[in-house]
View 1 (cartoon, rainbow, N blue to C red):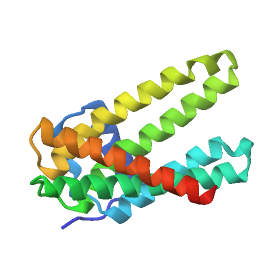
View 2: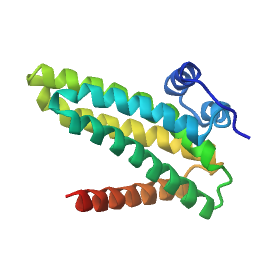
View 3: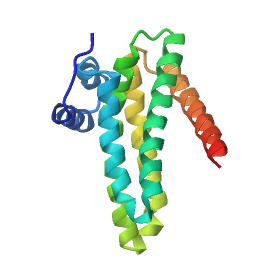
Length: 181
């Protein structure tokens, strides 16, 4: 059964996951929190990201929070569902908590980096590279978290779960954007 974690505990766990990335490191923490804890942590990260974009208006702030939380929920639900369909044995709490431990701090770090690049004006040209770096790091940590939280072997099953979840998330985002106009 998942226990509950505080924000300071999650920050410490995130630091460990980010500085010593491995399936074993994720295994240490996957049962230390719940979907609720993950959503709170992601909500704090989304609010920080939203505050960094507040100069663009309150709508950007709100859309960042809603988009981040919805994207996180859709992706982690899909990873869990697809993973269990492929023989994974982890719980939704384990998947969501494991993903939050890297997703939240990376989203804040990349939001800060993007803001700094925009402020420097010349740095705007580096934003695509920042986007690629963010993608690569998120894929790497997602691969480890998926193996850990779903107890999947490295390789094809893990990659197929992540690719299909990414496709599903993209489709949901596209539909939401089309509905909201």
